Length: 118
View 1 (cartoon, rainbow, N blue to C red):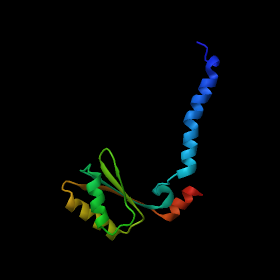
View 2 (spheres, rainbow, N blue to C red):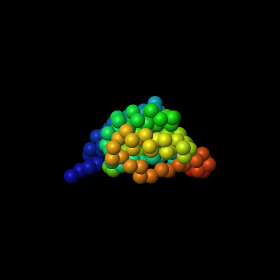
View 3 (cartoon, rainbow, N blue to C red):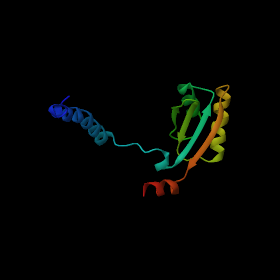
View 4 (cartoon, helix red, strand yellow):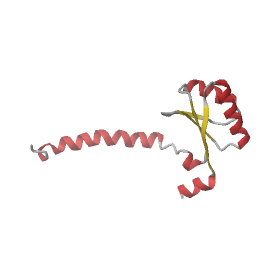
């Protein structure tokens, strides 16, 4: 097996993989998570219906929510919210989607995210 003989093909294959990645990185950049921007992450179990959770979350007063499916349920990421808005979101989701329970709430403040990015 003469691998060196086919090195030009390996270079071409590498370029075919690397160049589109660099182009997409230049066009769209990286979207930093809440670790870098600060925010609140609320995890719910008992549902896999992302669309229904999105509808319920949009009814609340939290701004710019993002809903992500996980193995055990869904994660809702938002800008930093206070405890009253967290409780409002929890109550609304648990009321509108039976069997859903809040598992965890994590809040990363701007000071922590500033330490990570500097």
